[in-house]
Image (cartoon, rainbow, N blue to C red):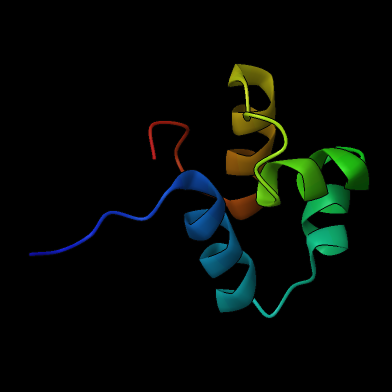
Length: 64
């Protein structure tokens, strides 16, 4: 049985796949580094605006 990744795990994998650092993602997304860190550390949920910014930075459809 396949275990689903949570959002933070998925985001970490996407960052690693691109050989980026969280700061690189924050810069590309136009977000504060602290916002990305809080999402990665599960201290904050990524709301619609953050998800859209992350999708643009990762060059992925928002639906992903």
